[in-house]
Image (spheres, rainbow, N blue to C red):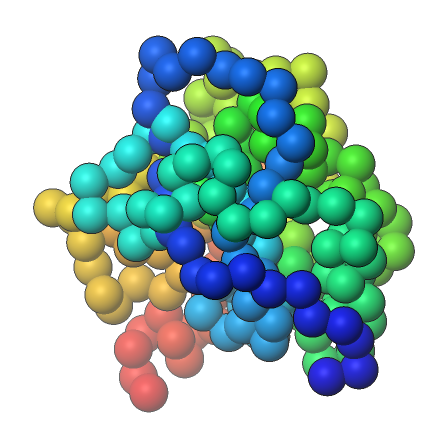
Length: 204
């Protein structure tokens, strides 16, 4: 690859209420380059650390800790930004852990704005165990509106094992939604992202 790689061992996650919150520097559990599993096209995927939800059967349990992996410092930011430069890279995906934990929003928002400014035509996908409505309501922080303004597609809702469906693209259970935030902002109501009919029809 024409850029430096910053990587930690693959850890994992989702979040839990009632845990005392501390001001910690943002950490990440891993970065996946040329990822095709977590959003449309070829992407760089950043898995941040820290989640209080603690969903049963979480695929990334090791990333529940806010100190899992490594600090998300300027060198890591630069490595990700450089990784997005090639024309074949469609954008950035942010997962966890839980990107929408209040601490993680503070650590991510400036970086996401920098990515969007540097690559306005590339998309940012974000996966969260919170629902879109919760993020606009009781889960809203001082950074939430800035975060959402950077995000093109939001995959929302907790993973629910009883609703697991392996035929779904880019989500694990049927309660989760893939929301087109650009269309949602224009419409003033939730508009779901539309997959390529070839994939949504399972005709492959």
